[in-house]
Image (cartoon, rainbow over all chains, first blue to last red; front, side, top):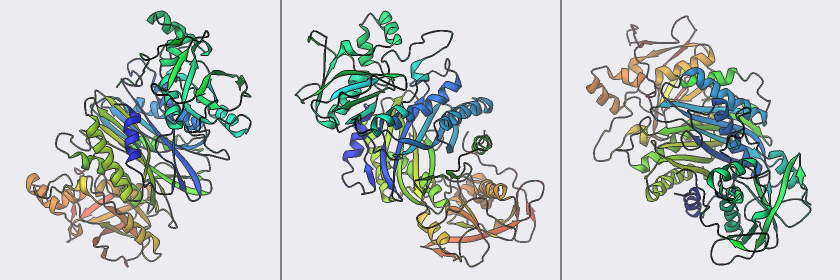
Length: 315
Length: 315
């Protein structure tokens, strides 16, 4: 089942959400008003066999990812993280020493982003490991950027490079993007805090550009045209393409867990780089037509089929 | 491993928590300051095979418990719930219809307590069901009651009746306490909001009175003497005693998942009932001695052995 469908159900069943809910379910974070302040909240799970493989992933990286996945949602709203709580169900026999190392990695990662871990729940069971982290954030002077503001004529941008997030590029440094990515919090706040560059819509890329941009389109009631030759192809996407025999743009459009930002803006005055991170123009927001929300074209204007891209979490 | 030990580790490793953390890990909820407001947060998991049995528990009750377990923590702080997020890892093949019914039960329960569900994360996997809920709360005019304020001479009280929470009392109404309990939010706020009755320390009973009162003693650096003949024995504890052959007070002291409040107060002016819920005096806070923090005595003053009570979650 698609997460989106079930969340949409929760949302639709909630026509009478109280006035304290300022951002309802369906965006990267929900928000409620608490004591006159907007509080943004996101929750994410990382599960053994779904989001990592316990047998070959260092526990420091598991702990880190459980936090950074959430921080990528904070970035998607251009918010500022303020705190976190963590829950863990650990396989029986995992051992207290390893559990402590895991929690230390979570705590250190959270604190490095100004997001102290203030509580948790721990259980053990005869099943696989699952970590669930909730992060809360505040606007801190910058109005959150939602998914629903894209307008026909807007340009579509992405940060960083895309594709192949599960590829290990070098045995030496062991960098694997889906574990080691950097949440784009500062970059997002710079973009959204400046009226010249403020995005009209934004989210973070967890399920692949084609699928995630579809979400912006659905919420904004528009379509999008992607120029596949403009996609910033990652080194890892090239590696993945070599293995799969598919073009590298296929991986850049369809692979999940990029944790880069995708945003739309009415201006072309977006810097090509912020804090060293490249920002690429990859397409345009167009009128909504019947059929798929996203179309992909080559540089010569020829349309390419992207119906077989659909990346879903391994569920 | 004991949850407390691991959380204590996270806490101890955190001597330099930022000033924004007003209640560090180790209480029923942590708290941070957000925009000049105190935000309280708790997270709890309910896992198939640990906290419920999927094969014989109606999904409405599973959904309800995933919310009320957290709300019991909110009650323990005398706070007011303001919102929640939920994460679910569902077994493959669970089916969208059943997932929706489960989330509806979570949503309805949360809303009934003024706690709208504003976001979530859903995945499926080849393991058992686990639901993780994070609830946010605010003091709303009543300073949170912590675990560390019990003083020698204080009286120990509990709400409701204790023991046997997993017993089904009647096939007809199907009430099973650990699934159907009522979080004591209103009662806690009435107690804590009145200077005459305000508790010096409070928590909710999840692991059994003996173990949970030990937590108040450890945080408050005191001991406690329980008079077992004063314990409010539940009907279910009597049923459990019939099966186990142990005295009913044994179940009232040792069984988990009562989700009643245990609190200490310097006054004897505690009403015997609030909103129809009985409140019972069950013991005294005494000086800390070497050895176990809790001792239990019969009406004649004779000490009884409670070393074999230690209830732990089935981990």
